[in-house]
Amino acid sequence: MSSTTVAEPRLRRRPQNPFRVLLQHRNFRLYWLGQTGSQIGTWVQSVARGWLALQLSNSAFIVAFVGFAGSIPVLLFSLFAGVFADRFDKLRLVRITQTLFLLQGVLMWWFVWSGHITIPWLVALSLFNGTVNAFDNPSRQALIVELVGKEDLVNAIALNSSGFNLARIIGPAIGGALIKLVGLSWCFLLDAFSYLAVLIGLFLIVLPKFSAGEGLVSPLEGLRQGLAYMRSERVMGQLMRLVAVVSVFSVPYLVLMPVEAQNVLHRGAGGYGALLTAVGVGAFLGALALAGASNELRRGRLLATSTISFAALLIVFAFVRSIWLAIPVLVLIGLSMIITTALANGLIQTVVPDALRGRIMSAYAFVFVGMAPLGYLLLGFVSKLSNISVAIAGGAAVTLLFALWEFGTHPEIRRL
Image 1 (cartoon, one colour):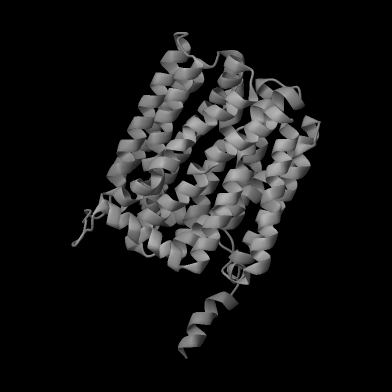
Image 2 (cartoon, rainbow, N blue to C red; image 1 turned 90 degrees about the vertical axis):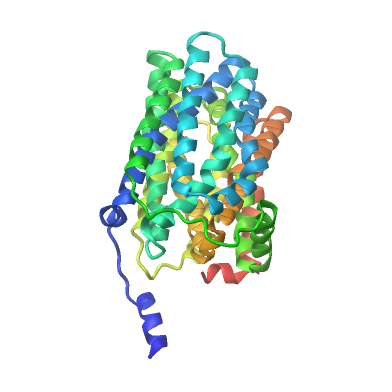
């Protein structure tokens, strides 16, 4: 009798409205609207920062190094940040980090507007941004379950990705237009103002009073507990390895996009924005499809398909020489990339205990964001020795071979 009850949901196909979670959960609706508005500003700043680094240096390596500076703090601090996320009020932590992001945007605007910006200052402000992100990311990721509950968690993560990628569509287009029409500095000011949207939403969210619980261990012991859990859970380790390889060898293509636009496709800031927008269109469509997926969906099998497709499409993109061919390929790349990353995130959060959620999500940030700087430097170095096409294709080939091995030798992931 009980086994029939458990199996029944898998046998019933139930497509869902992808926006159902927004309609049912007021707190998540406030969070999603604010975050999406803020992410538009973040993408405007991302376009401007990459273009600024290229204009100041005319070097693919420097462009990659600025990306490295923005992500290396996540590698250094995110695991300890996860301990904070499990010990303190996550909503309060996110309010603090978003305020600091606003401050960073104002500083970037002033340095560029006043003409004082240099590569060292750009690197320093990227380091500041990355340090704040190290504490913001695990807190935000772990907060989502408090906004929607476990039943709607995977759909909420996918919908959160759709907001991020809606911003990826709009942000680069706005960024490219602002650079062309009024100059780089106003991109950073717009980013600073966009954080007001997320802060308004965060201060309107109402959650039960936070309780730290009893018997809290020391931060080092808390970190040890999180690492011990990941070592003991076989599937968790497999998912983390996959995320790490994708992060280091494939995701860095985004950081090299301004070089691709200028040196390979021979386009200016508008073309650069169009390339990022194409990625965003595909990612937005993929996230919406995942948010509205039926209960029958075999997420592990889809994860294998999307990871392999992502790597193969990147190899194709590396050797495209026309922007009109690059754009549709990038739409497919964006779609497969977001399905891969959102599914991996959702599967990890589905199995992790609540008491360890902040630490496990900090580990996810460690491998997905924190290890990305290694890829930025690696692909930037390969670009310097050879060219950008070899760098992107080589990294994607590593991901493709690893995915074929991982899913071929570990069928338990495909059964999730």
